Length: 274
Length: 274
Picture 1 (cartoon, chains in turn blue, cyan):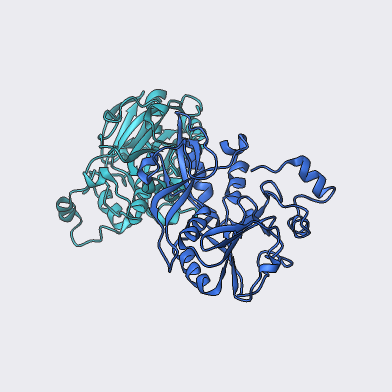
Picture 2 (cartoon, rainbow over the protein chains, first blue to last red; picture 1 turned 60 degrees about the horizontal axis):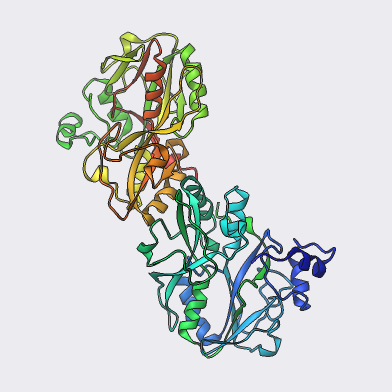
């Protein structure tokens, strides 16, 4: 999911790739329609779910009941395209590089702008993303194999059921990162400080205990090797709400396209609880 | 290591077994010469090491370099029997239920009072003890098997070397508690809040990675079962400094007798870092 620095250079030019508002302005102009990994990397990026008001009420309760996979960073006013706590200029209709439009649980389009689809009853949810805690883990010197190997993180449908709300239900999706024991202990400490971006792991060790039959066959993302002296550590994952939406099959829904996240003005370290 | 409540009742009578100063006064009178587990259980208990000034200087550097096994709660002025930060009335010569007197690395006596042995060059070290974090773990609802089974915690000499200072050196001794994965994650969070009483674990999972050949054969304490769905979690242990003293063989040294700790006025929750 790493951004090609060559193509980023040609798009962003001499501008500051670490400035969230600048990067968002380039995206708003339709000049960047790809992954956001590596862009404004000190800034919080978010998963996005946009639903009509009726389903939005159910989905808000779903997130409240499942804070580890669905930590809410912001919820918009119905029909408002702004999210002022995440960026003064932010317009959710234009500020994602690419969107997925869902109808009855199926992806029907992947546009780079949803202005033409906007409705007065739409509510936007921004959900924390593991990019934030991964930055903290890397700053602490912990190796992240999927990043070293330029792969997506490995994700699995677990047998941990989420708490349903309305039509939204389904298994918790988890991401897995392998660590040596002492690094796993440190990773638990560090991610515990970031409850708004999934927080502490939900499991570690034997994958079968949470219904994962084979680590080499992830349900999403790419497999990464777990060495004999390593412990697989599992975090609740922001793909969980997308899986719940696919099961709930709402009449209409818009999400970010995989890897094309919302870049906010918040700094990752601002999310630290202590 | 649990205190017989019947014998405690006969000694402490109607007095408050949870009042540290009262319990210490009974000990000072020589009326309680046994284990302190379960006495004033909300209060911090400490491992005690008393050394002549020359060795004390080396030992202070040893503790500074090895804060996980040797977290210092207090160090006395040379020759002073008081430890005012741990209790206004505290007198280290009388306030432990039982002492061990060491000469050249061998235990030569186990008195209940060391007033006759006191010297003007003696320095007292009080080192944090896992009783404090065990209280926090139990308050969080985490099961501690050795306590459920009324055994001592299992302790092992690891292959993790401590940082030497002067004559003091040796392996880190670790205590092991088995937990299910989700409880192990919670235990890491909770003990991370208590760096003055060993803090976060130093290892978990495969015992062989830290040089432990057989969990069923601890070097100190009692073996406890690790169930198939559990992870053994290892903390640095306050027996480490006693092992270093046995190796350094100082001319003279006094410690607490096993399980007969110093009861302080500090409350366990006061040690929480956050």
